[in-house]
Image (cartoon, rainbow, N blue to C red; front, top):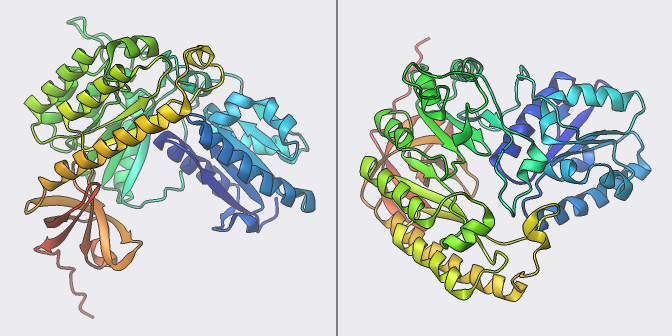
Length: 455
């Protein structure tokens, strides 16, 4: 590697991938690489991939094809594919794209330096074998200076019949609570105000850690972790994602209500509103249990924002079963729903079933659901009109440099007039003047006064 080596990372998919990309960027910068915005100017390009949906995979191959041509002209260019597609395809990727230097699964994100050393010695490397995830001392190159991701558990032990994640991200591995708290304390010292705890199935946190209380209750749960980290000075907000209804407890909801820094936003995927489809998905809960969770949240935290993931067109889904999903969405009133048409994934049981739903029907159902989601989001947003909300200012509005943007505690994106140099990282009171389905606009109340420096 020359002293002027540069890199570019392209990230697809979930928050876990974004957090992994920040860690890998930190490793690259510790090795002397500098980030460049234009991938065509980079000496190393890393694609951190997602295989949850078929179209994400196709995008990766499209990008790779362009850079493979560039590598034929410049053999010194390093091409790296990381993440779930890398784990899923392994050496098959190398056969399809022989120009690749390194293929690495998600569990190797904090071993990138070791793998690149092998590449520099002249090897083509495929790292997809199961491995214990090392506690990471690398300093991530974080995209924000205000909010930060903190991984608390890697992998997933669930076996949902549509999902590739257990095969691509491996078994559950929880980080020790002391290590998590130490990372959060360091983030606070660097001026970060909000952290989001991340896990593919965050409610499973601690199941692989020792600890039973005298009363026989398992310790080191997500609830225990929230109490452990809550009082870190400087951190003003705590979020967590993604929750699984099978393990979501009343004790966790109660903790969220009791702990002032934990934001009033719950992301709990339900995937389908029909019990037979949920059983075919191997989700491990019923529609009725999901509704009880929502009722409990609203009892403890009445104004909580609710978001979820849902799939339409799962194999065998009838029109009546789809309508039960619509009915559930109507009953709950979500602030946001991530919607998707079922996409058969390699190596999953559901991909082999003969009762696949035709694409045209899946598309029609997705459109119908999205219409409902947009209407419901507008209704939920409308409740903010005229209210004063606490906003953590994060960045400039990319469409209007005269505005800054941040989020409510319920995770609604909010725009307001202001100067980013004055307001970045500030918790400000904002009166909401305009509501839209997925964002708000408001005006500052009692703007913070910056101290005047006297010479």
